[in-house]
Length: 79
Image 1 (cartoon, rainbow, N blue to C red):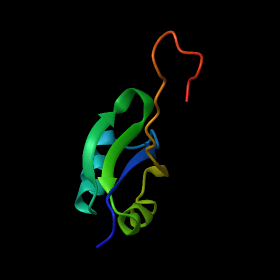
Image 2 (image 1 turned 30 degrees about the vertical axis):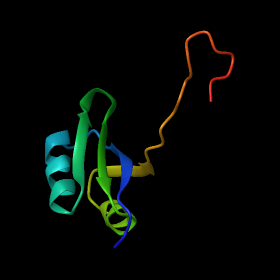
Image 3 (image 1 turned 60 degrees about the vertical axis):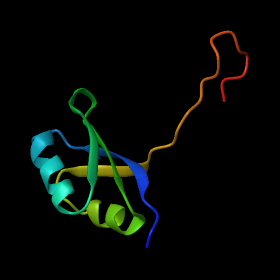
């Protein structure tokens, strides 16, 4: 069983985000958020599924979603 990871999917503007999200879901992505204003969808899937999703019409890029810790407001260290 492959490890489930978080992904950020960048989509093209020539198709509806809800149409692309439906197709991604049908191919195995668990949708977390639709970020229509910036043309991205976040979701969970294993690596094999993510590779398959790259070939869906309307998908521009798929990248791992990496947590970022900015630290406390008065900290000099950002990472």
